Length: 453
Image 1: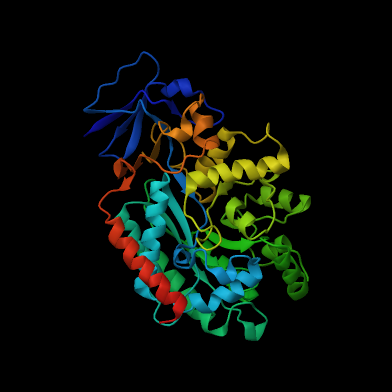
Image 2: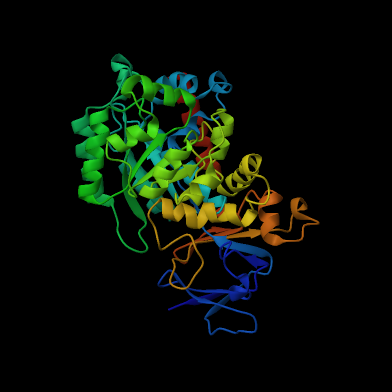
């Protein structure tokens, strides 16, 4: 057994409703168990094997990203879609993404997860719905990368089954037969899905969106998820175009459609959720259906401002997500916290949206959205997933409150990150990763994908 004391931090975020004095002198982690075993209050001196001086650090729970598309790191800041809204953005990118290869996905996943780690993120949900020819093992590839980097991940077996020939948005070569989708979904759950505290890899089922998946596949996915006891994920109510599509094709608004296919439950978490009315917010809260708020992407594509405070107040588990790296162009969770703070203050004002509340969205809220009770908080018995940020650069000079400074002054990178009691980031660098070599090959793959060679 090795007990390490993270001693005397500048500040520690135990949650917006918790007394930070309970861990004023830091926390003790059992690295063998991978859990937090003690909160050290003022005047206390724990018995430990090792001490890490955290006097220059703010400690938060490891940040949790509830929505991403790792493969999109290959199409960041692509000029033809830089100034388009969602549907036009998608129509132009689908043919590019259809050329995805296994090695390109491996590189893209590694870049996304490494970037997330450097930003203080310890658990990430990815929504992968592209399975062109030769990409049958896409999720298997992502599992391997997750294990190599030592993160936790909710990897979702996404799907598209409604192509343009049948009134959907994706080109036909990017859609799959529903039987193939469901069979592969069950295979992946049986092979990789871990249950219980400390799970590193989990699998969810994630038909892409109302405009790219048939009604029957949505319903069948819900039935399969219940039988296998895994979570469900999809895009919903991201744009007004999507709402109009649902009205014209199904004769329903988005939440009515969700209910009609058996998805309105606490098994489900939704990406974006921008365009809900009061009745829909109440229905989501009553069902315990979660929402992944993606502020940067919603601003980038001019999709709108999610009603995050009203959703949370209605009982909706609310988390944060960076979304894909072609609609955010970054995979940075601490930056997303700041974006959420400022975007939501535009809707609700300053007093309802504090730095601590938004940090809760990125930690405990995100954990709840993914159905996890063992991560997202700093407490005895919780997994030792921790992010540690230094506030000693020019950007923080003259700041006073460390928690507020972490968000308001714009932290970009964690100095140390621990996952399950193991350091995965030291001095700002991902342990064991040759970043320069990764960037060189990833850049080459990105250029080849766009050029079609």
